[in-house]
Length: 221
Image (tube, rainbow, N blue to C red; front, side, top):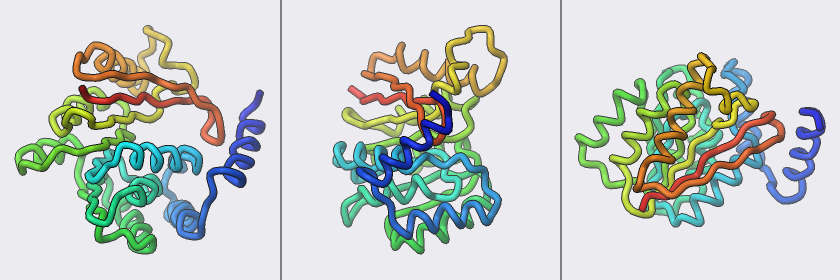
């Protein structure tokens, strides 16, 4: 199988079971127009995030890594009327695009984007006495994934779902000799999850429009 074939299957699945709409398409178009990196989740992956958040009954969602807000929209749409999503973004230019996308989606009342490196914001959330989050999506710079997990646990409760993206990295994650920062960070992230007695987890490989990758899914005990 080739990436072209994976992309064709993704397109078929999007047309049959995933669905799309003008708001989501406009968000992707705005991201492209702003020259944001084309690293958003795929539509099928976005719908998965949405369904997982709904199944978890999430009222409070934390997203680490906003980019242009495409995944943010998928997640925020899973929230009830009184739900809240806090998304952390290091780059102001990304946050500007994301805010416009979120306003266009009619979700501005549910979504707060905080701009600064996540490792600066996460301790503040703890200091503020934020209530635990029900669902945490980690999809930012991979070298810092181990630290993000540490803070995610501080901001969670029993039953919180933690989802980490891009954990296969074209199979590179299997190489213990890799010096690539993203691989090293991802390997330590997965090892910490496996070693953490409070977490029950699994990891799934995926192929599709975004190539060969995968995610790790954990629930806090």
